[in-house]
Length: 279
Ligand SMILES: [Mg+2]
Image 1: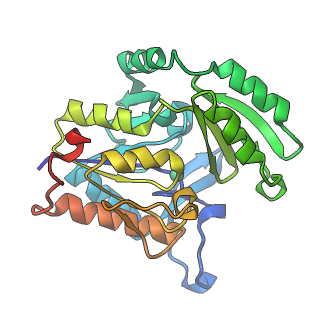
Image 2: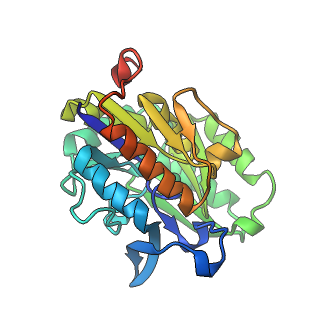
Protein backbone atom coordinates (compact mmCIF):
# COMPACT_ATOMS: atom_id res chain seq x y z
CA UNK A 1 0.00 0.00 0.00
CA UNK A 2 1.54 3.29 -1.02
CA UNK A 3 0.61 5.87 1.56
CA UNK A 4 1.04 9.63 1.26
CA UNK A 5 1.09 11.50 4.56
CA UNK A 6 0.45 15.23 4.13
CA UNK A 7 0.97 17.09 7.37
CA UNK A 8 0.95 20.72 8.33
CA UNK A 9 3.95 21.75 10.41
CA UNK A 10 3.35 24.65 12.80
CA UNK A 11 1.14 23.79 15.77
CA UNK A 12 0.46 20.37 14.20
CA UNK A 13 3.83 18.57 14.26
CA UNK A 14 6.18 21.32 15.49
CA UNK A 15 5.70 23.91 18.21
CA UNK A 16 7.32 27.18 19.23
CA UNK A 17 7.99 27.77 22.93
CA UNK A 18 4.84 29.91 23.11
CA UNK A 19 2.74 27.13 21.57
CA UNK A 20 4.01 24.18 23.66
CA UNK A 21 0.98 24.35 25.95
CA UNK A 22 2.55 22.11 28.56
CA UNK A 23 0.29 21.48 31.53
CA UNK A 24 2.71 19.42 33.61
CA UNK A 25 5.26 20.80 36.10
CA UNK A 26 8.66 21.57 34.58
CA UNK A 27 10.16 18.60 36.44
CA UNK A 28 7.74 16.27 34.66
CA UNK A 29 7.97 17.88 31.22
CA UNK A 30 8.98 15.75 28.23
CA UNK A 31 12.38 16.12 26.58
CA UNK A 32 12.12 18.13 23.38
CA UNK A 33 14.02 18.03 20.13
CA UNK A 34 14.67 21.39 18.48
CA UNK A 35 14.09 21.17 14.71
CA UNK A 36 14.33 24.84 13.78
CA UNK A 37 16.72 27.67 14.50
CA UNK A 38 15.98 31.29 13.61
CA UNK A 39 18.87 33.75 13.68
CA UNK A 40 20.85 31.26 15.73
CA UNK A 41 18.15 30.76 18.37
CA UNK A 42 16.00 27.66 18.93
CA UNK A 43 12.47 28.19 17.61
CA UNK A 44 10.48 24.98 16.97
CA UNK A 45 10.28 21.68 18.82
CA UNK A 46 8.63 18.30 19.03
CA UNK A 47 8.82 15.72 21.79
CA UNK A 48 11.37 12.92 21.51
CA UNK A 49 8.68 10.23 21.02
CA UNK A 50 7.07 12.37 18.31
CA UNK A 51 10.43 12.76 16.58
CA UNK A 52 10.93 8.98 16.64
CA UNK A 53 7.45 8.40 15.20
CA UNK A 54 7.98 11.02 12.49
CA UNK A 55 11.23 9.28 11.51
CA UNK A 56 9.40 5.92 11.36
CA UNK A 57 6.62 7.56 9.38
CA UNK A 58 9.09 8.90 6.82
CA UNK A 59 10.42 5.35 6.41
CA UNK A 60 6.97 3.71 6.16
CA UNK A 61 5.26 6.23 3.90
CA UNK A 62 5.86 9.27 1.72
CA UNK A 63 5.85 12.07 4.28
CA UNK A 64 5.07 15.46 2.79
CA UNK A 65 5.28 18.58 4.97
CA UNK A 66 2.47 20.91 3.85
CA UNK A 67 2.87 24.44 5.10
CA UNK A 68 1.90 28.06 4.54
CA UNK A 69 5.55 28.95 5.16
CA UNK A 70 7.51 30.26 2.20
CA UNK A 71 10.22 27.93 0.81
CA UNK A 72 12.81 30.06 2.67
CA UNK A 73 10.96 29.73 5.99
CA UNK A 74 10.49 26.00 5.41
CA UNK A 75 14.20 25.50 4.70
CA UNK A 76 14.96 26.23 8.37
CA UNK A 77 12.91 23.22 9.53
CA UNK A 78 14.73 19.90 9.85
CA UNK A 79 11.85 17.58 10.62
CA UNK A 80 13.78 14.43 9.75
CA UNK A 81 17.50 13.68 9.46
CA UNK A 82 17.12 13.23 5.70
CA UNK A 83 14.85 15.92 4.21
CA UNK A 84 11.58 14.61 2.73
CA UNK A 85 11.68 14.31 -1.06
CA UNK A 86 8.52 16.39 -1.44
CA UNK A 87 7.26 19.41 0.47
CA UNK A 88 4.42 21.84 -0.18
CA UNK A 89 5.04 25.50 0.70
CA UNK A 90 3.22 28.83 0.39
CA UNK A 91 -0.11 27.12 1.11
CA UNK A 92 0.13 25.13 -2.12
CA UNK A 93 1.87 27.78 -4.19
CA UNK A 94 5.04 25.73 -4.45
CA UNK A 95 5.76 22.00 -4.64
CA UNK A 96 9.36 21.41 -3.65
CA UNK A 97 11.18 18.33 -4.87
CA UNK A 98 14.54 17.79 -3.21
CA UNK A 99 14.35 21.37 -1.98
CA UNK A 100 13.70 23.03 -5.36
CA UNK A 101 10.33 24.49 -6.42
CA UNK A 102 8.72 22.74 -9.39
CA UNK A 103 8.47 25.51 -12.05
CA UNK A 104 5.53 23.92 -13.89
CA UNK A 105 3.44 23.75 -10.72
CA UNK A 106 4.35 27.31 -9.70
CA UNK A 107 3.34 28.59 -13.15
CA UNK A 108 0.07 26.62 -13.11
CA UNK A 109 -0.85 28.07 -9.70
CA UNK A 110 -0.17 31.61 -10.84
CA UNK A 111 -2.25 31.24 -13.99
CA UNK A 112 -5.08 29.80 -11.90
CA UNK A 113 -5.12 32.91 -9.72
CA UNK A 114 -5.88 35.23 -12.62
CA UNK A 115 -9.48 35.76 -11.45
CA UNK A 116 -8.81 36.84 -7.88
CA UNK A 117 -8.08 40.30 -6.54
CA UNK A 118 -4.54 41.36 -7.10
CA UNK A 119 -2.06 40.87 -4.29
CA UNK A 120 -1.18 44.55 -4.54
CA UNK A 121 -4.79 45.56 -3.85
CA UNK A 122 -5.02 43.31 -0.80
CA UNK A 123 -1.66 44.42 0.51
CA UNK A 124 -2.63 48.07 0.05
CA UNK A 125 -5.87 47.47 1.97
CA UNK A 126 -3.97 45.76 4.79
CA UNK A 127 -1.58 48.70 4.90
CA UNK A 128 -4.53 51.06 5.17
CA UNK A 129 -6.21 49.26 8.07
CA UNK A 130 -3.09 48.44 10.04
CA UNK A 131 -2.88 49.77 13.57
CA UNK A 132 -0.24 49.79 16.27
CA UNK A 133 -1.12 46.18 17.01
CA UNK A 134 0.44 45.24 13.62
CA UNK A 135 4.17 44.80 14.09
CA UNK A 136 4.90 44.06 10.43
CA UNK A 137 3.26 43.42 7.06
CA UNK A 138 4.74 41.02 4.57
CA UNK A 139 4.12 39.51 1.16
CA UNK A 140 4.92 35.83 0.77
CA UNK A 141 6.19 34.12 -2.36
CA UNK A 142 4.45 36.77 -4.49
CA UNK A 143 1.17 35.01 -3.69
CA UNK A 144 -0.34 36.34 -0.48
CA UNK A 145 0.00 38.85 2.36
CA UNK A 146 0.19 38.50 6.10
CA UNK A 147 0.35 40.73 9.12
CA UNK A 148 2.31 39.92 12.24
CA UNK A 149 0.18 41.17 15.14
CA UNK A 150 0.17 41.56 18.89
CA UNK A 151 -2.69 39.18 19.66
CA UNK A 152 -3.42 40.75 23.05
CA UNK A 153 -3.88 44.17 21.42
CA UNK A 154 -5.87 42.97 18.37
CA UNK A 155 -9.13 45.02 18.33
CA UNK A 156 -12.36 43.03 18.53
CA UNK A 157 -13.88 42.60 15.08
CA UNK A 158 -10.74 43.58 13.14
CA UNK A 159 -10.16 40.10 11.71
CA UNK A 160 -13.88 39.64 11.01
CA UNK A 161 -14.01 42.92 9.06
CA UNK A 162 -10.90 41.96 7.10
CA UNK A 163 -12.43 38.54 6.41
CA UNK A 164 -15.56 40.15 5.00
CA UNK A 165 -13.57 42.51 2.76
CA UNK A 166 -11.46 39.59 1.50
CA UNK A 167 -14.48 37.34 0.90
CA UNK A 168 -15.97 39.88 -1.52
CA UNK A 169 -12.78 39.61 -3.60
CA UNK A 170 -12.31 35.85 -3.61
CA UNK A 171 -9.76 35.91 -0.79
CA UNK A 172 -9.86 34.45 2.71
CA UNK A 173 -8.14 34.97 6.04
CA UNK A 174 -6.58 32.76 8.68
CA UNK A 175 -5.45 33.75 12.18
CA UNK A 176 -2.60 31.56 13.43
CA UNK A 177 -0.50 32.48 16.42
CA UNK A 178 0.75 36.01 15.77
CA UNK A 179 -0.03 35.98 12.05
CA UNK A 180 -3.12 37.06 10.13
CA UNK A 181 -2.95 35.65 6.61
CA UNK A 182 -4.84 36.93 3.56
CA UNK A 183 -4.81 34.45 0.69
CA UNK A 184 -6.60 33.88 -2.62
CA UNK A 185 -9.34 31.33 -2.02
CA UNK A 186 -8.06 29.16 -4.89
CA UNK A 187 -4.58 28.85 -3.32
CA UNK A 188 -5.04 25.57 -1.45
CA UNK A 189 -2.96 22.91 0.23
CA UNK A 190 -5.40 20.28 -1.10
CA UNK A 191 -4.70 20.97 -4.79
CA UNK A 192 -0.94 20.65 -4.30
CA UNK A 193 -1.35 17.53 -2.13
CA UNK A 194 -3.50 15.89 -4.82
CA UNK A 195 -0.81 16.71 -7.39
CA UNK A 196 1.88 15.06 -5.25
CA UNK A 197 -0.43 12.07 -4.75
CA UNK A 198 -0.78 11.74 -8.54
CA UNK A 199 2.96 12.05 -9.11
CA UNK A 200 3.82 9.44 -6.48
CA UNK A 201 0.98 7.07 -7.39
CA UNK A 202 -0.31 7.08 -3.82
CA UNK A 203 -3.29 4.88 -3.09
CA UNK A 204 -4.04 6.34 0.31
CA UNK A 205 -3.68 9.90 1.59
CA UNK A 206 -3.54 10.75 5.27
CA UNK A 207 -3.52 14.34 6.52
CA UNK A 208 -3.07 16.44 9.65
CA UNK A 209 -3.54 20.12 10.35
CA UNK A 210 -4.81 22.66 12.87
CA UNK A 211 -5.93 25.77 10.99
CA UNK A 212 -8.65 26.90 8.60
CA UNK A 213 -6.03 26.62 5.86
CA UNK A 214 -5.80 22.88 6.59
CA UNK A 215 -9.52 22.24 6.22
CA UNK A 216 -9.39 21.50 2.47
CA UNK A 217 -6.37 19.23 3.00
CA UNK A 218 -8.17 17.25 5.70
CA UNK A 219 -11.22 16.97 3.42
CA UNK A 220 -9.34 15.71 0.36
CA UNK A 221 -7.52 13.02 2.36
CA UNK A 222 -8.90 9.55 3.06
CA UNK A 223 -8.48 10.11 6.77
CA UNK A 224 -7.00 12.81 8.94
CA UNK A 225 -6.46 14.20 12.38
CA UNK A 226 -6.49 17.64 13.92
CA UNK A 227 -5.31 18.80 17.33
CA UNK A 228 -7.70 19.84 20.10
CA UNK A 229 -6.24 23.37 19.83
CA UNK A 230 -6.04 25.88 16.98
CA UNK A 231 -8.38 27.60 14.58
CA UNK A 232 -10.34 24.47 13.62
CA UNK A 233 -10.81 23.57 17.29
CA UNK A 234 -11.88 27.15 18.07
CA UNK A 235 -14.62 26.92 15.46
CA UNK A 236 -15.62 23.41 16.59
CA UNK A 237 -15.06 22.07 13.08
CA UNK A 238 -15.42 18.32 12.64
CA UNK A 239 -15.72 15.85 9.76
CA UNK A 240 -16.50 12.12 9.81
CA UNK A 241 -13.07 11.07 8.54
CA UNK A 242 -11.15 13.50 10.78
CA UNK A 243 -10.11 12.46 14.30
CA UNK A 244 -9.34 14.91 17.10
CA UNK A 245 -6.53 14.55 19.62
CA UNK A 246 -7.27 14.22 23.33
CA UNK A 247 -4.42 16.51 24.36
CA UNK A 248 -3.34 19.90 23.08
CA UNK A 249 -0.06 21.72 22.50
CA UNK A 250 3.10 19.73 21.86
CA UNK A 251 1.43 16.67 23.44
CA UNK A 252 -1.12 16.77 20.61
CA UNK A 253 1.77 16.76 18.15
CA UNK A 254 2.94 13.51 19.71
CA UNK A 255 -0.55 12.01 19.36
CA UNK A 256 -0.75 13.12 15.74
CA UNK A 257 2.61 11.54 14.83
CA UNK A 258 1.55 8.25 16.44
CA UNK A 259 -1.90 8.31 14.82
CA UNK A 260 -0.39 8.84 11.36
CA UNK A 261 2.23 6.13 11.92
CA UNK A 262 -0.31 3.57 13.16
CA UNK A 263 -2.43 4.03 10.04
CA UNK A 264 0.54 4.09 7.66
CA UNK A 265 1.70 0.76 9.11
CA UNK A 266 -1.76 -0.84 9.20
CA UNK A 267 -2.10 -3.18 6.21
CA UNK A 268 -5.83 -3.40 6.90
CA UNK A 269 -6.40 0.34 6.72
CA UNK A 270 -8.65 0.89 3.74
CA UNK A 271 -9.72 4.22 2.33
CA UNK A 272 -13.37 5.10 1.86
CA UNK A 273 -14.84 4.19 -1.51
CA UNK A 274 -12.81 5.85 -4.21
CA UNK A 275 -10.28 7.29 -1.77
CA UNK A 276 -8.70 10.69 -2.30
CA UNK A 277 -9.17 10.43 -6.08
CA UNK A 278 -12.94 10.61 -5.67
CA UNK A 279 -12.92 13.83 -3.67
MG1 LIG B 1 -0.56 24.97 11.56
